[in-house]
Amino acid sequence: MDGTDEVRGLPDWRVLVVGGASGMGKTGVGRALARRYDVPVVEVDDIVEALLAVTLPEHLPEVHFWRTHPEAARRTPESVVERQIAIAEALAPAIEAVVANHVGTDTPVILEGDYVLPGPATPKGPVRAVFLHEDDEGQVTANYLRREPEAGPQRHRARVSVLYGRWLAAQARAADVPVIAPRPWEDLAGRVAETVEDASTKTVASTRTTAA
Image 1 (tube, rainbow, N blue to C red):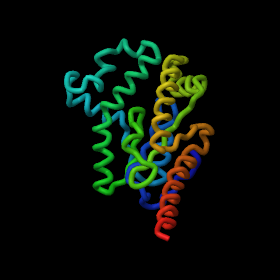
Image 2: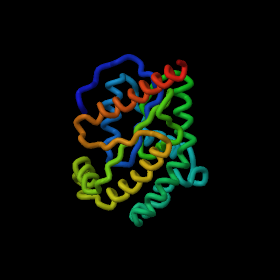
Image 3: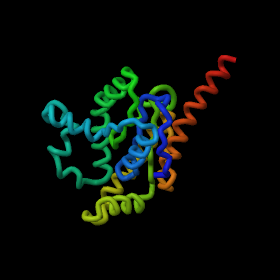
Image 4: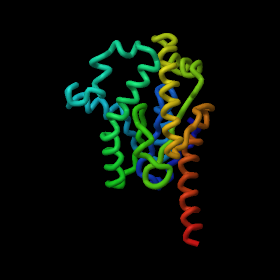
């Protein structure tokens, strides 16, 4: 991303959540941050695939929804977003368990994905989070076209992404979790790292002030 890949020793957080809708640049920034902090990445998509492999639709109907109702992806963007929110909420206990495990075992990790919610994350302490949001549908369409040129312009998908991203961003702000614009791409990883590290600095400063 911006060349800031140096290892800085163990970070002072144990889980760094990189959330946001599809097409916002989460995967790229997650990998850049993994190099920067020398920690692994856990993709929420892998958690979803694991759950799909060991459960039946009657066990977790929301998680299985796109497989049992493939036609639903072509419904109105608003309808698709409602379903995405329901899936994210259904996945929340599994994601919270992963977060708790890494905090409990003192093993840092970056958790990245569309379905991670800001609920289990805090801007202070062992769990930090940032959410990426691009509000320009044309830009998100261009992002998809660059990533998946064989699919052509995916305007419906981009509309869904922006609407879902707006909802996630609102949830994040309500939880006091930073929301960052992906552009400019060149310094995105640096801006995310700075935001996370600033939260730590402010926490320490606040603690010192209170103690004084």
